[in-house]
Amino acid sequence: MHIVEATSADTPAALDVERHAFGRDDEATLVAALLRDPTARPCLSLLAWDGGQAVGHALFTHASLTGADPGRGGARGAHQVRAAILAPLAVVPAAQRRGVGRALIEAGAARLAAAGVQLLFVLGDPAYYTRCGFGPALPHGLHAPYPIEPAAAWRVRALAPGVLDAVQGSVACAESMAAPEYWRE
Ligand SMILES: CC(C)(COP(=O)(O)OP(=O)(O)OC[C@H]1O[C@@H](n2cnc3c(N)ncnc32)[C@H](O)[C@@H]1OP(=O)(O)O)[C@@H](O)C(=O)NCCC(=O)NCCS
Image (cartoon, rainbow, N blue to C red; front, top):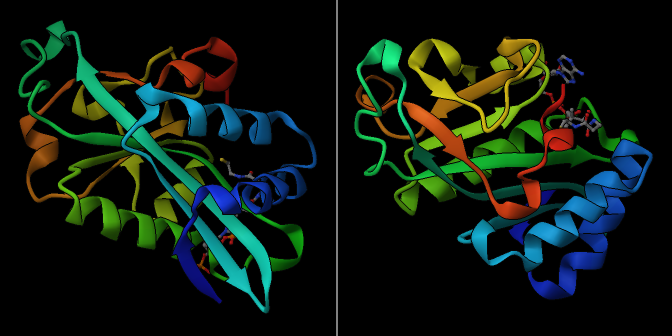
């Protein structure tokens, strides 16, 4: 298995992985929209290949921190921090539970950190994302674009030392993802 940064020529393969992993079109439609969306940039699209087959896809899109968390004294450091959101993460059923999802997360985190991104957010199963280095975001004063139920599904991973103690605020995502239906767990 190897992981590469997807180019526009790889978009059909990425969309196929999304459809196959989720068993529906919604995530593929979102990925196609995000790849066209200027507000999602910089974005990182990673494909995992195994034996000539695309088996996994992860999309990381630009996020920013805005607003304030009055409970913790305002949006400390919000404007300086560089952030990204992982959504969606998809591994085709035949390749699941073999470390592909984790490898995509690690490859993305390494590339984003090298590019200066300090915080990586995700909405998803707390059990899975805890294993992949993400902790709950709300206790750090880091709010999702929409209220999340259960709150523990909104998670963050620090890509730079000390950043979780230095910033807080509300996360703004790309326009294509800024609709309540994308923020339900
Ligand atoms: C969720 C998904 C991305 C996981 O990918 P994967 O390649 O199967 O996961 P990995 O093999 O990298 O698993 C990493 C760890 O999480 C565990 N794990 C895998 N799936 C899990 C699950 N559903 N719940 C809890 N833990 C899980 C693995 O056992 C492994 O732990 P270990 O290293 O301690 O053994 C994949 O199952 C998928 O695409 N599912 C359908 C789409 C989806 O729900 N995507 C996520 C929401 S955006």
